[in-house]
Length: 186
Image (cartoon, rainbow, N blue to C red; front, side, top):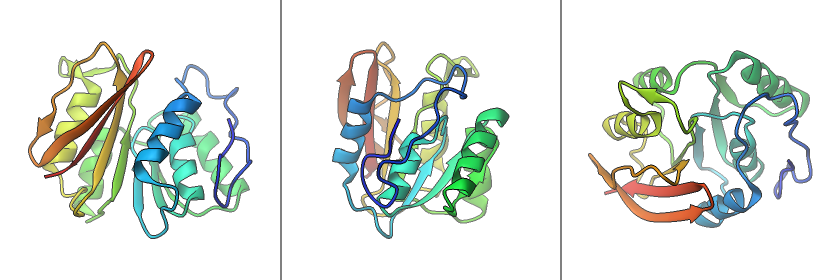
């Protein structure tokens, strides 16, 4: 995997050491950045379930201030080391998405974009984790910027709600086995 554009263009993201992480295909990554834009200078971006970090790293390369979160300790260490080796400063957390939403909400963080791509088959209280995290985000103050967006990636056989508190699903795009739901503030 390579960074496509921006200040980190061409740098390789190691994927062979990440284990069973599901990597976002290039066409989905391209679609995400067609949605949010090529110049993210001055914008704040949360990669809530970072995995390889490829989406957050691409946003960082395009000028965004990025906060990464990866619950898996081994993948967290790989991503943290990569950021250090590249000389890039960014906040990075090693906790569950649920805990991080609570922590950042109390710390008064605000984001223009949240990318949400938890493991497809993980559940929380009998519901898909992606749905649970969307509910938590909609109840938090993390997306209060006018025009703020959450991009939720999930399995295409999962139907998730199109409205949650002040979030409205503006668009749905299908790509093979994956779906992107794009939410914005109402």
